[in-house]
Length: 408
Image 1: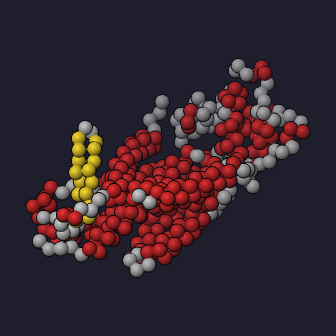
Image 2 (image 1 turned 90 degrees about the horizontal axis):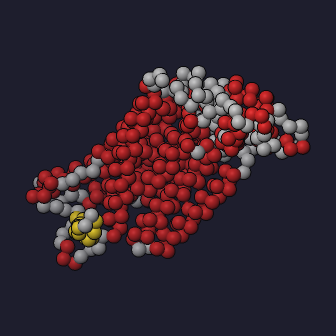
């Protein structure tokens, strides 16, 4: 088997990215939960916010939150930052290796927009940079005096970005770049707001003074934003495995819907932990309703999908025609011995060398080549609309293969 540097880089970087992400997400959810369950105590003293008892690993923990701290404990403080930095750095490296390295395949869809490789990468990079600058500027300007207005504008801007990305890039890339943009905002929140504010609070405590309470408020607000963005970003990072989302003709609407679902679930968790169970369950019900609507929406045939409504009344599609399409358009990658330079082994173990293998994958073929046009990847082998219509008709007839070929 030929050594494939692309695959190994993908594996190693993805491994680090997932590990770092688990640590970052874990600390985010833990500290937001902790803030929600802290109980203030009358004897807490100056700067006291609250205290909580925890039981884990066979022992009891007592945790107290305070906005001030004696200088004697500052050297033993535990800071939380590298989880965020490593997650973003590994994610950015993965973006380069998987998407930008082969932008012609993963970033560009000629049926969406006729872009060059440089243009597609520029759009992706621009989304990361401009997304952070606009978000940060908006919340610095309106965050303290009009947070609800800032939130409304933020949501409207995200809808606009989702629409723009899905009308410029391939569906797969649009979802991924949306997640990368939100992940960049989260990491930049840590690097540009949370950590600088905490360093100022640390310096004030070391000097024996008091920190500006606005520093704590700003850091907490950005940390809360990160918490609410976590579930939408996780969906976007795994969406490339589910073409019925990014491959849908109205994929921007699916993207926005899943963004809302993630925020709704997060609001349920936070509201429940605060004791606002009514609000929490209302948020969960709304999230479930949006999720159900998205499932129904994606189950409907896309307007651009090849139609085969009359297939059962027409003459049966000759399997030789179907097999010829696979031989010309698919087995370059999906074979025991792929000839493609991109894939030394068949992606996802999917092979179309024999009629039995083709029939076995009928449902997957319908999803990937008919319902969403996700395959061939980047339509590198230039499967035509007529060929897709032939496959659609064959699938509608039950994906028959000659009995003599069943055991081959």
